[in-house]
Length: 396
Image 1 (spheres, rainbow, N blue to C red):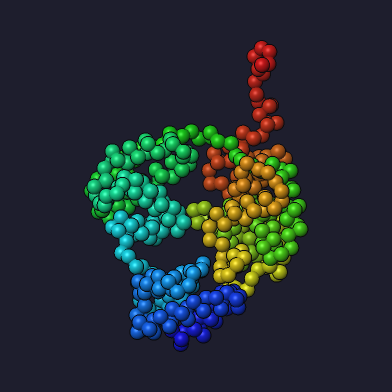
Image 2: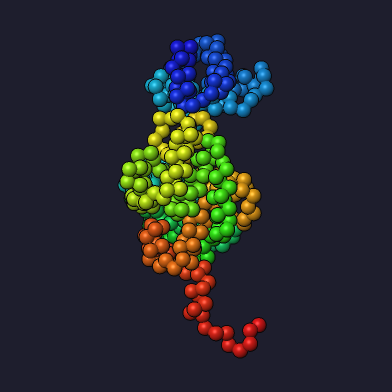
């Protein structure tokens, strides 16, 4: 593999790896190269089994260290991308029939139904969990799944240690998957129609908004974060608190979405909708400070990147939730909930208390249905007092 070391080192440098990280990776890869030479295996003949055999061989010679498997995965993925080795190197085992169908479903949901990639993956995860529970230790054929098994699973699991939204997502995922399976002739019965609904009541929950004083304290403390990670986190917190962006919208925000001359940014929202939003001065200042002084050099066009190599964009909404959780801890706040959505709720509650109508709040938060905005009426205590009937008799 010696001819590939120099171009691979340039690739690692472009990805933002330090010199120390480079030497650690290449030292282990050079050992792999020598082992391949000893076994007379050419670079273009590498398969997944060779990596596993070498890792076992290396473990007998010295204590295994973290990152060794990642180093091998990195070089083999790069060789695969360059066309040196077969694409099957990353797939040592053939997926089961159910898993292959689920992978096909994810592609179908994206290309045929227009679902976001993350939505298709999440739906596949719900379906995988249900089918694994039904299958047990036996091999399951999709054509053998019965409506009674689906109903029994939901009856046993939906009410137990599950939120209503989780159960609702499970039902939606099952119906979507079984429509696909019927369309592709994997099943002959309409199992989608047999999936029961989960009992739930609209407007039953109360928005979990971060208290206004906590939001102010969090943003005030973030002004003192001057390192690259702190600059990134402050910009993200302001996008959540000032514009009410969802975590996924921040993840997918790109450099080209920010129009500095006109003072607005383009938000990629739910349902693949794109909406321009005004860019407040403090939010724009925080983003510009991060881009100038904190953002690592990278070819990635995402606005917010990882703080450690490889310097790619943030992946999912959970990355934003982790940033908010750590920011809350760093600010010394003690809250029951640490998710990112509570800052979006806090913005809605603050606008409501300032007398802004629910219609206008829905437009700012980009709600597609008025019912989504009406739930904030529950936290308008002053407005509720005006319409509340007097308590009959003496107060308890």
